[in-house]
Image (cartoon, rainbow, N blue to C red; front, side, top):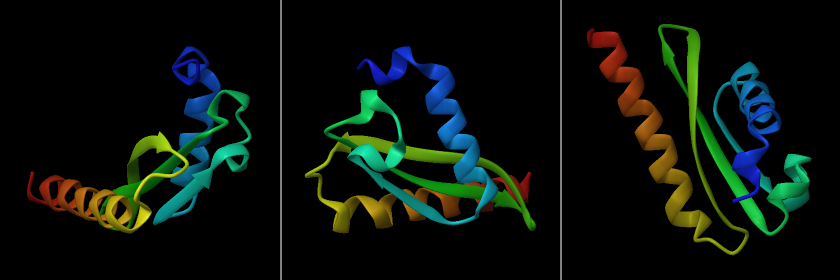
Length: 87
């Protein structure tokens, strides 16, 4: 992936995702990264209490199975949040 070569831009996008809780979906040019053309990014924040502490996501083709991937990303973020609450 060329997108991974532009780590700074990708990290900036993930930082923006952290500013607003929940699931975010960027399809192709919506990510404002030229390297993401033809790709999509689905992210979800994870939290401790009411504080967002991180974001995880999946990068895939624009024609990925969104109906399957979105709940998996959301559920994984919820699991990470629960694990962080226990520790």
